[in-house]
Each structure stands twice: as structure tokens, then as C-alpha cells.
Image (cartoon, rainbow over all chains, first blue to last red; front, top):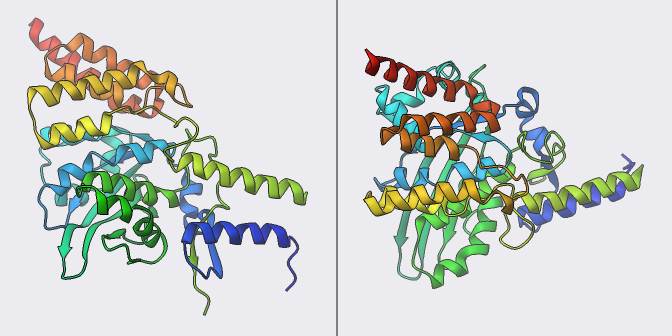
Length: 230
Length: 128
């Protein structure tokens, strides 16, 4: 096993270190390896459906929805106007998000002409107060599903947390966020939406860039996460 | 060959920073202004004031495209504005904005044409 391009591998490892925020990064998984279907199918447009709210906060759904378009469009995708789409679906008689998420994906191609649908779930949106520390959690999972094949093209694997005490609560990307913004949270009033924006920015990081990005179809080798060696 | 690959990787790393939306640095792909904040404002407290701020934010996104790498109005902004006009009964203005949306973004043609057809159908009814 001799490396043909040792410097290149070193560079990838260094990038891996930066991205993961971990001390050990034995195996780097790239966008191309993690999400090959994105590169095969190459969706240009994303229809953002209202989030599925599994948190204890009833308002989380409306609030989180205001943060979703920007990060995905800035990654180079055409994002359908989320509010307009949501209102139109209500006019069409679909009020229930659960129902919406169970519709055949082809419906969204027929009605909106969307290449893919972005489904988000709010897992947690709360602050838990404890004796010595409190934890603010905005935990989101997101996936992109093809309207042609109904296959999942991209999914964010983890959740994102902030430990207000400044500790590192999650591995990988979650941990990175925790350490970068915990200070800000400590000094400012807890603002979920502001936090959701930051969480989204990290969430879309793993997404292959879209057709309006300068790097379209050139980011297959970008590392997205690392796997610990066994 | 080697050097080329290293340079490629370096450029990639720089590009990641651009995409990730760091606060300081080059211009973003689009200038969203206060779109998200004003959208949140409408959701938090639906008043005439918050609705006005939302519309102003959309208009800002449309006017201030110079402050972006793409020089384009962000996706969905013309559609959003058109939809406001549609709800206000200003069909001609609505149509105008829907046409602008699909002209910039061909991905929106299907959806915008559907909206325009709806407007035309409504106006057809009115004339009867």
C-alpha cells in the first residue's frame, strides 16, 4: 500500500480535521461517496415543504420554515418560495404536514415542476435547564427526495445541538457548532431562529452544490464527515 | 500533475468558505437583505406593519442585486412579490412578477405558468 500522491492525501486529512473538529480523523468520506445519487440525478430545483414538527414547541414549525430557503438556494439550487407553496397547498386542501409527506413524490413534479423535494423534521426545539448547565437544542434532520424516483438523494445524518455551558455535546458537525456559537448564546437572549440559521448553515455543508454554484459537479472530493477507524 | 491537483484542492477549500456563508469575506451568491427576518416577523406577529416590512424586504432583494456574486434576484423573490399582489387583487402586477420569476429561473416555468393560467382563468370569469 503505497500512496501515489502523499501530499494530496495529507491535504484531504487536514481538511478533514478542520471539518470534523475531532482530534482523530482516520477515514474521510467525501460528498461523492456519501451522496452519489445527487451527482447522478442532478436535481436543479428543491421544493421546500413545511417542516414536520416533532418538538414540544408548537410554534417551531412556522418559525423554522422561515430559515430554510436561504441556505439551500445559496448552495446553488432553485428553491421554490416556501410560504407561497405552503399557502397554495392549503388552498388545494392539504393542511396536514403528515399527509403532505405521504403524498406520492411525483405529485410535486406534476404540480410545481420540482425536481426534488426537501423534507425537514424538527426533532427538538427547546432548552432544558439543569442545576449547573442548560442545553439549548434545535435538532433538525433534512432530506432531499427525488420526485422522479422517490429515492432519497441526500440526507443529513446527524443532529445539531448547542450546550449552553460550552461543552461539546455532539460529535462531528454538531460539536463544531456547539463550540463556535456557545459563547454567543451565553451572552445574548436565547433566539431559536437565529440559532436555526446557524444550524442550517452547517446542515447544508454536506450537500453537493447545485447548478447555480460556481463549483457545480466539481465538489465530489470535498470531505463531508469522517469515520473513526476500528 | 501533482501541483495541479494540490491547487485544485486549495481552490476547493477556499470555495467551501465562500459557500458556507461566512460573515466576513466576499459577496454571497445572492443578496437576501432582510428577507428571512421579515418573513419571521410575519409569522411571529401578522400585522399590517409586519406585512409591509415583508414586502419591503422582497423589493429590496429585487433592487439590490448588485451586492451579490450572481447579480440575480434570489430564487422565489419575484414569485413571493407576485403572490402578494395576487392576494391583493392586483392581477396584472402579479402576472408581471410571475413572468419575471420564470424568465430568470427556468426551473420555475411550470409553477409560474400554472399561476398565470389561474389568473387568466379568473379574469376570463370576470369578463363573462
